[in-house]
Figure 1 (spheres, one colour):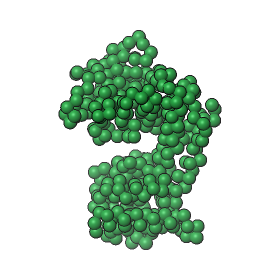
Figure 2: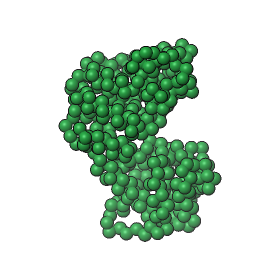
Figure 3: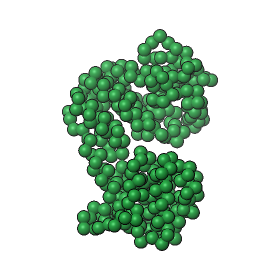
Figure 4: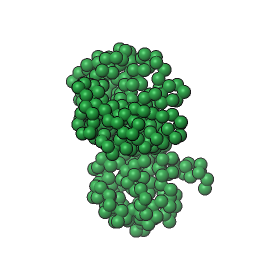
Length: 365
């Protein structure tokens, strides 16, 4: 079949799973797989549940497909990042960008050998048990397991919506600083929280002052490398023509020599492709994230610098930078910042820990 035909077929399969999942008259006996399916939802690693969804769809497309032996025979990346993810987005079902591929990268099959190398291993074992069940002449269970899986995903989406915050936006810089600082230090979400806050803050700062500067990188997750995004840093200030003016690395993990080397390599790749050289990078981080070799300053905001080849890395205190930037923003741009931050946290893909903390913080102010 053509790519379009395949994508349409995948959507039909998923819609069938979805319709059964929401049909109160459709009774499912989960006794053969309930423990294993439940186990996929007792972890923060979303890829395990998503790889099972890929396998289910692949088995519907090709009755002879065996994920335990030739996982990549179904082209799982194209399958998940194409029609499956589109379906999940359309139905506001939480997912990750490449979750199933991250846990099964360069894997021949979903079997005991694969599970032994995965963490948490017990969750990987649940995946293997489901695959074994389906391949041991139990393919009749595909629709049932698919519907059960979608039912849990739908329930999770409904559950997460309970933490959404609806209130008038604040323009008070002290209130906004408190919200941001608490989120960054208590719910960093693998670096996604500080990166998003910084990007939205810079974006609305420039919009408020009508500088014409464009912020890029704000839509990427922290796990996306600069090489993958083809941008020199986590967040970048660019002119309207797309020329990078300033590069920012945002982190709540040590930005040590190893990270500096990675950053330097990305800057060189960007320079080769764009013909534009970058001589300095702002690292927005906590004091404990600075390298011990850093040349220290006596300032509070700029904690020091580190020279690597021809690049100078300036280390800025993330709390001090947030407080200072909020003070320089217009009142209107601070309100827009709050609204966009609230919208990001309300998104069905934002982590539960961030949602819960945001809700509790807003109840305090």
